[in-house]
Each structure stands twice: as C-alpha cells, then as structure tokens.
View 1 (cartoon, one colour):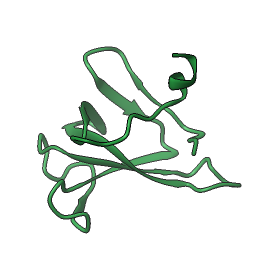
View 2 (cartoon, helix red, strand yellow):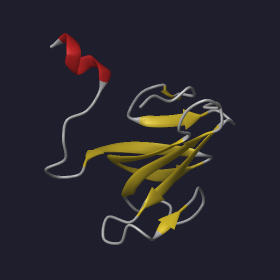
View 3 (cartoon, one colour):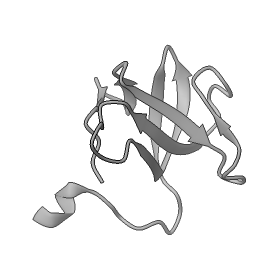
View 4 (cartoon, one colour):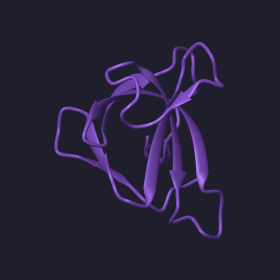
Length: 94
C-alpha cells in the first residue's frame, strides 16, 4: 500500500503534511477512540492516514507507527507499537 501524499520533516522527527493528507491518531488502548489535530496534544497514539490524492486506490491507511500531535498541524514520530512487523520499502534493499 502506498500513499500519493507525503509528510516531510526538517529534523527531530517532527512532520508536516500537505493539505491533501489528514493524520489522525487512535488510542493504543482502544482502536475505536480516534482523535484529530488539536485534540489530546502531546498524547501518544497510533497513526491513521487519509490521503485524498489516492483516487484510484485505497486512500486510508492504519499503521503501527506511534506519534503525538505537537501543534500547528504537525506530529512527532515516536516509533512503532511493540511486537509489530517491520515494514517499509527500504527493506527490499537490505
């Protein structure tokens, strides 16, 4: 599964997204508890992404990546859920 839109960082694991990409966080304890930007600032959750640029494929991805919102539409990547599978395109080059 691939996204058309990307999140970019200028360092320190803080990411900005484009207007076509919306990031939500879901609770690590309750997968039905989901919050958006501006809710629960600095509380860690699991990343869900809606990518409006994906018009011919799935535009929603639920990851095992942990993050927290830090304000101004940005999020900080914190790592992965314990015991989750290692994922990513770069694994093919290892």
